Amino acid sequence: MPRPGAVAKYQRFLLKKLLPACNTLQQARRELFWIQKELPSEQWKQACIQRGRHLMPLQYILGNQPFGSVNIKCRPGVLIPRNDTEEWCSELVDVFRGSDTFSVLDMCTGSGCIALYLATELSNVTVLGGDISQDCISLANENIDVNKDIIKGKIKVDSMDLFQPLAGDKKFDVVVSNPPYIPTHELEKQEEVEKSVRLYEPRLALEGDLPVFKAMVTYYIIPSQCKVFILEIGSREQGQYTRSLLDESWVVGLRLDSAFRPRNVIGFRTDIESSIKRKLMTTIIELFKKQR
Ligand SMILES: C[S@@+](CC[C@H](N)C(=O)[O-])C[C@H]1O[C@@H](n2cnc3c(N)ncnc32)[C@H](O)[C@@H]1O
Image (cartoon, rainbow, N blue to C red):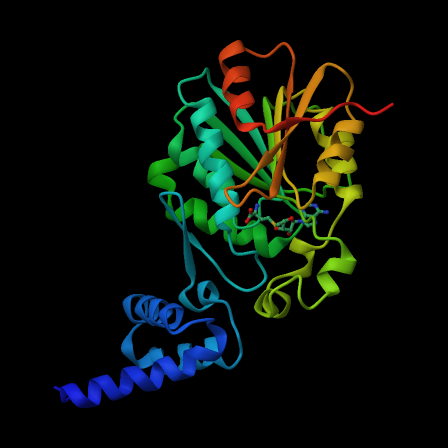
């Protein structure tokens, strides 16, 4: 049994190792709590060094990140699920809870977090997740497997390239996506993107702009004949551009996140069920006008 003084000294030593990656002592304490909760004691020192000196994101060190009620496995090569994404998934679940059974395409599925969120919260949904990265497909399949008792076969994932048309004549009721949307010039600016993100998270998951939204509309939203879509965006311009690609049978608007930043472009066909329309309208802050 180590002496209390020795324990406190070791805690201070670990906190010191963590501090360079944390803005505050409070944040370092929080991270140390998770390291000590999730990892065996013989890994604590190495984990604090990985985090503090090498700036590896905590989720890659712990190997998971909670997302809604699901614990999503994380590893380098696949984007860590973000709170901003969790926030809109939770609103989407409220929109569709209790509705008729519907099918979803989750394009750019990554770890599968969005698909898993929907399938664990809703009994009336089936989801196909698509991604170009084999690392993502493998991890999404692992996440599905870990949660198979809850999701009961409601999710499948498949290799898909956003810049290639949807194969076959697959139809979906809803298209959702958190695509890569950080323009190259922003990704390269030091102050715009956290260093640990630039060092460890895959560029493939981050870099993209208007062509991504063009492909999403022309290859997936229109051909799938979906009635609702919700796409994560990085700027209002990306939302307005998405609007410009769709005809007048669509209502398209902007959703802000809880920090009041443009976070989603949401679209629905004018003929969808009125209760869904009403709920979607409560999440939209501004309707995009179709520019001529
Ligand atoms: C921002 S991440 C989102 C991952 C996950 N949906 C999430 O919210 O955490 C974007 C994802 O798009 C995938 N991706 C990038 N280019 C793609 C393409 N051309 N076709 C399909 N997926 C692509 C990346 O592999 C990555 O998993």
